[in-house]
Length: 579
Image: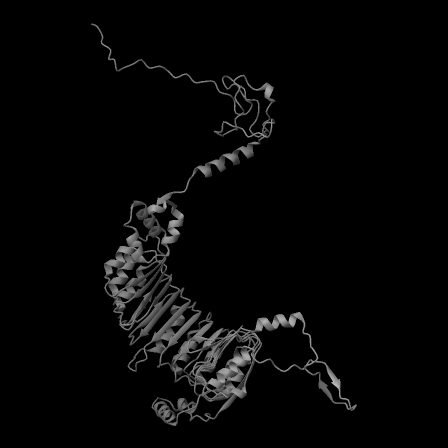
């Protein structure tokens, strides 16, 4: 039988490998064992003794055919230099990905990502619809995003937030500005799409309502295993709190009201801020809340509670909680907090760095206890809206050696007799005669003078001190001074010796007082010089007079430079306008 061979099939022929030379010594590679080790220096023979093939020497581990030469001498390379050269060539070959951007040509992907980071969320959604390159770039940016700020308009639904969160796989910090109502469904959406979220902030615009209830809020905190920072505004619908989390360290809740139960089982919490509503129908048991903090939050360092129902009982319960790591204590708007509460605070907590008792009824005696208890630790003291302290108490507070911030706004003010009668009647209705004795009728309300001399004070606030008629401040490190609404401060009784002053607030003050402030802080009128040369009178008397202005007086270059530096250094702000 005859065999038929197809014309399409051809006999296979093996490809012959050409001769090539050794990359180390230059000899033919066929049947050759190179005597040189990789670590030895590669030396090349003169041009006359080149291999028979006539090829130039090749670099080891390199694909270069040409060897760089200087004149007629060959190149000497070590093994380490060869490896470095190969790594450099590999880095050059890895070109960065380029994206087509309209008619502008090709743009590096990293540059386009930096541009898109500054585009709003709606702009990014539109950019993803331009082309395939832009869409891939936007996707990469969503996947690598760690922090996201979203402003939810009233027309936007929860699906808008879902469509954004599902793209952010590695999101760690989320900030929502809600212009529409928010409920527990939003928290469920965040927990589903961002299980590794570390920080969440929800703020409300005017007209927006927070409808999150206690059940949904507590479930959200327990499900988020990585959440450490949580700040939510408008929590008026939280009927109770029973939080349990081992990773939550910072919790801010505002507009709380009528909490039937408040338990914070967070052993690693270091900062807690609870701002209650100003309405008079709040029925939260503040003493029980303060007492539980010692058992459930032993590592608490910063505590802020603002409520009109704060009283001495709540402060005594806080003192018994024994928070050993507490460094910042802020108890605001507690008009029933007296010097007895201050005594319990200074006995229980000996290392406070910040103490805020604004809105309390403490007196100068309480300030004296604070100064004796914290001479080496307290750096910030806020005593605004305290009607029972006088200028003597403020001067006593300024004796703290490490004090950097002092706020006594609306404390040294002219009293209204009708207002005093109402306050006395309201205090008489509280239980316990001991509290009423601390709130005796105010004796101050005459015009007072204030003298503050401190080497380390940086910020002083005396806003609304209408009973202040004279002020002398000698603080070389003072940078910010607030004199807003000091209506009775006399311009001739004002003296500011603060060379480091940067800003003075004088809104609501008289024009003459504003002019006096500008003259002193801006150095518009130079002080009279006392270092000019003096000479004796012609009659031979011992009286000396200054040299007349006709005689030139030369100042040193250092004085001229310091004078230029002082001019224009401080800004005087009046009604949000800086002069």
